[in-house]
Picture 1 (cartoon, rainbow, N blue to C red):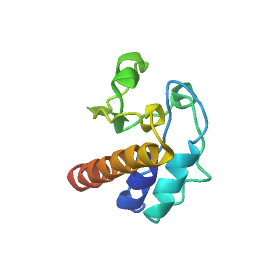
Picture 2: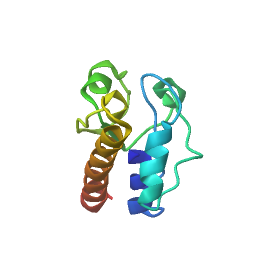
Picture 3: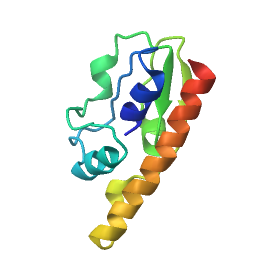
Picture 4: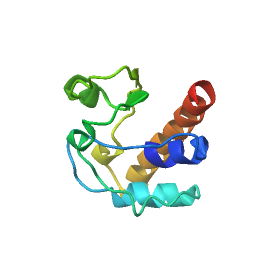
Length: 121
């Protein structure tokens, strides 16, 4: 979701990459809630952070505490940012409750991404 919003708000001012410390595919519920907000992430992929080891990033953003703790060292001058968002894929309850969790996280990511672009790009 962060990749989708960062691409939207950066509007071509930056090349956005997205990766994790594990790959599971893009969650269909994330695709659904992003589509509700006008962003299509259905073609996004689940990439492992090691795929980008040779890229000299300007910024590295981690979005969960687990990733921050386990993220490999990037030998670069990248400014590092961290914001812990709850993992909506771990939400429990009815489908309505789970989708509500996805929407809450989506909205938090939207706000963070917009502010990040405004302040850093």
